[in-house]
Image (cartoon, rainbow, N blue to C red; front, side):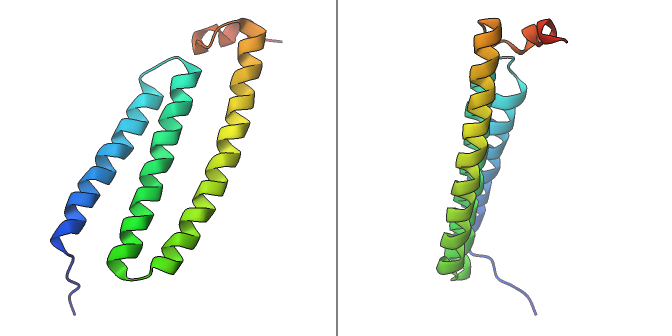
Length: 106
């Protein structure tokens, strides 16, 4: 028994992988906390996109929509907590550069 994957899936999959790589690169290539937070958002949007495409191609849109809503709720909680940490860091050091985190030692 073989499963036939539509040709369109590969285009979506390539876009998903490129978006995920872009989000990871945005998080890893900078020392600015706000840019890292934006990279995290891009990464989460790529996961959301992949869930929507997988649900559409498999014919299970209801399940995909439920999973996307769950991912969005988790994403909002993570981003709010991370934004609070970034704001606290900025108030303490007057910069968003991670290299200045050493000045926060005990």
